[in-house]
Structure formats: structure tokens, C-alpha cells
Image 1 (tube, rainbow, N blue to C red):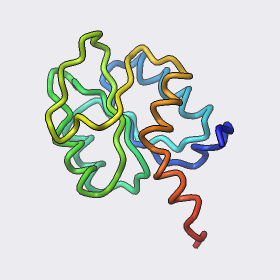
Image 2: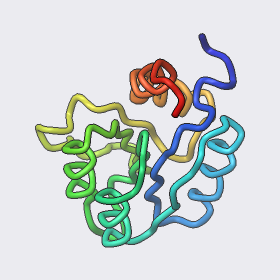
Image 3: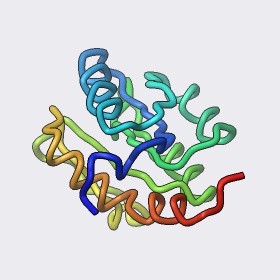
Amino acid sequence: MGTMNDFSGLRVLVVEDELLVALALEDILNDMGCEIVGPFSHLEEAEAQARSAELDAAILDVNVRGRLIYPVAEILGERGVPVLFCSGYADTPVLPAPFRSLPQVAKPYDEAALRRAMESAFGEACRTRDASPAS
């Protein structure tokens, strides 16, 4: 594997409240062939999308306008949508117990580091999606 098309067509929910960071992430995900749902910069919008949107994966900023993203991550977890957390803090706070095993990536995004984190977080979603018959 490891081709540029590993993530082609992957529907990724993006929750990020910093405009320039969101734009940079959009550029990287577009280059990877992902379909971006968002980006959303408010927890309420993110929760609504997490409940109803057709999603393959999610990249969630841990702190969105001073509020923690964990309620959105819980909804996604219940739906079986894999999550990648991101944070701009060098000393990212310890994630709550249910989320400690989930991958994290630091901001600002380094494309290679983001790709590695996405492969770790979303690899199974890509394989499952690729193996399912087209309808």
C-alpha cells in the first residue's frame, strides 16, 4: 500500500476552529483525495454532523472555541466512525480514558505525520470500504 490513493473518496468529518489551520488541513486532505465534510468550527454543528452525516472517518480538534470535543467523539464512536484527535498544544492534556488509545497528531500539520496518523487511525476503515462491493 502506501499509495497516494489510500484515502481516495474517504468521507472525513473535519472539526477545526482556527481558519488557517482548517484551510491547510483541507488542502492536505484534498491532495489525498478525501471528501471533506466541513470544516466545522462549532461544537453544535459538529455534533449534528456526527449524528447524521455519512462518514468514514473524523479529524477532530481537541479544543473547539474553548470547549472539549469529546461529546462528538463519543457519538462517532457509537457509530463506529474512527477518530483522529489533533491539538496545537505541545503538552496535549491526557485524553480521558475512553479515548487514550486513539491516535493523535500535533498542529500545525506536517503532511507526512498527518498521513501516518491517518493510516493508523483510518487504515481499517479504508480496507473495509475498499472490500465492500460497490452499490
